[in-house]
Picture 1 (cartoon, one colour):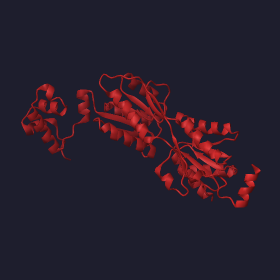
Picture 2 (cartoon, rainbow, N blue to C red):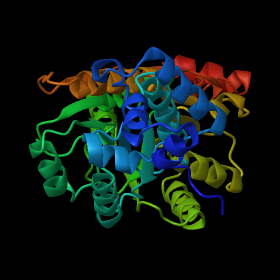
Picture 3 (cartoon, rainbow, N blue to C red):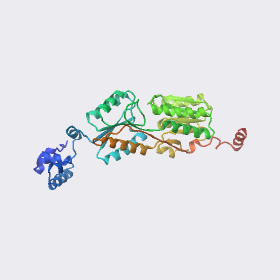
Picture 4 (cartoon, rainbow, N blue to C red):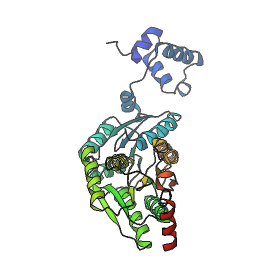
Length: 354
């Protein structure tokens, strides 16, 4: 293994003091009387040899690691990975790096990640929080280290939050189905008490109750085996054959649901309508294309970055901010009016009966 280059190695190669090298690398050459010529000499050499500072050592020396820790539910999920990419690209411009991990919705894993980040002396935390870590997060906040929640909240902890309006997004999606003549709309969601999930269920129920229509909610255990999820959705549809539309609370539940529909020999957009909360690029490529609620991914990332950088400024304290962003319903063929593909005589008869 190639030996990692240290400050003392640079100093020895250039025949200068380690203190001079350290001050130049930390951007303190001017205030410490280092000449411009020596500064340029050191920086040129550093670039040539590809020197990378030990961020942990820098953090111990300066109290600033220039690193941000981010915890998401699953970094492979397109929603979380896209937001991480936006944040990563933006905080890089301010000299920070992003490290992240997946909690898998586990309190134990999330707590371990928080401790790892703390040991690494990260300068701030961006969290899609998991229930059960309130105490650990509270301790971080007491240390006046920036903490920002996104996607979901966690109790009444005094930290900034960047959330989306899950309730209104779900409500609009279900009302869209009702407007297109769907009357028996079932919802497939997670068995979860997290606020983003309960809000989506709340929006679904409010929409149907406002129209005097029945509700049917199927809850799936988080990280349930895919084959079992498909089977549960198939059994629900067999048991409630009057169901004419499905509203999925997440994109990964929708993917299992679409397989269940296919295995039952049903056709999306003809036999059953489909709408999904949380759009992904592939939904527009399906046949028929899938109607979905799109979350403002770029705006979430930009708002998180903006608040974080404000809180990281030396001596600049700001009050906690609560940002609520709107969703957008991308209407596609999977939720087309229910009578679209009926034989002309049946479609005509339905219209007369209204």
